[in-house]
Length: 126
Image (cartoon, rainbow, N blue to C red; front, side, top):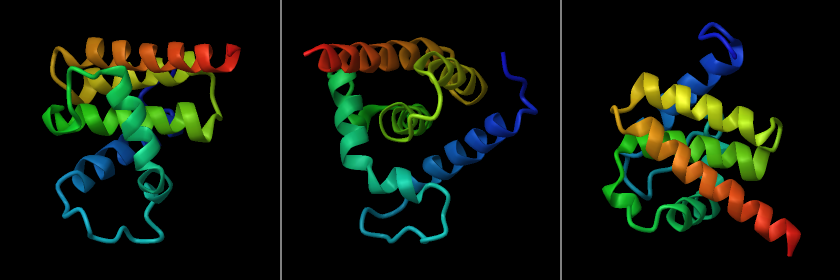
C-alpha cells in the first residue's frame, strides 16, 4: 500500500482540492491552461456520464462535492489516463475518500468505481 508521503498520493490530494474548488466556480469560467486539472476538465462530459451511469440514483448535483471530485479524478485515471491498474486507482480513491470525505464516502466511491470497471470489462468483451 502506498504511504501518504508517496508523491503520487500527494499529487492526487492536490488535484482533489483543485477539482473541489472547481466545482464551486461558474460553469463558463475558463480553467487556466497551466492548471494541472485541465485534462480532467477537458474530459468532464465523458467522466460525468460514466459517474451518472454507475450511480444513477445520485444525480451529480446531489453528490457531495468532495466525493464528486474524487470520482472525477479516479474515472479520469481509469478511462483516459490508464497509467495504473484499476485496483490501484480504486484503492487510492478509497483512501482519499477516507481522508477527505464523510464516513459513507469510501463505500460509495468503491461501489461507483466498481460499477464503472465492471461496465468497462463488459464493453471490452463485446
